[in-house]
Length: 118
Image 1 (cartoon, one colour):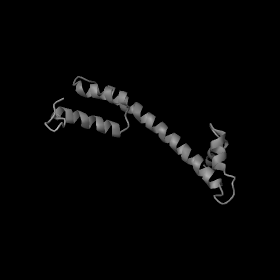
Image 2: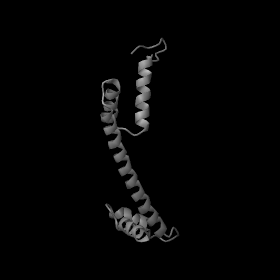
Image 3: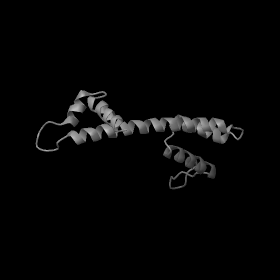
Image 4: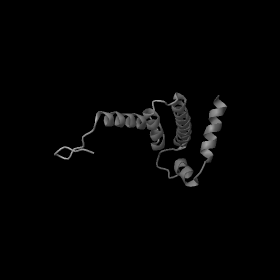
């Protein structure tokens, strides 16, 4: 890679486009492996858009699963916080739940309460 006298890297227009592509793909949460695949497809002008769509659709499914997991965590934490007195007493369902490890009773209870409300 070429450098200026001050030691800064000199990027070509092509390099800049590639770096912007990578940055945007990272911003959308694609993995390094997926970005490599997308870069290869971007460079291949004979590519099938179906290959690009397959990667995007698989990534959407991963993001939706992560969102489901986050909603479940929020529900569990909300339930635990609602049942913690938050006063001078030492008993705390939040700490009790953390000490249990794994899927806890509070999570199942919160899910059951949510289902009952629907």
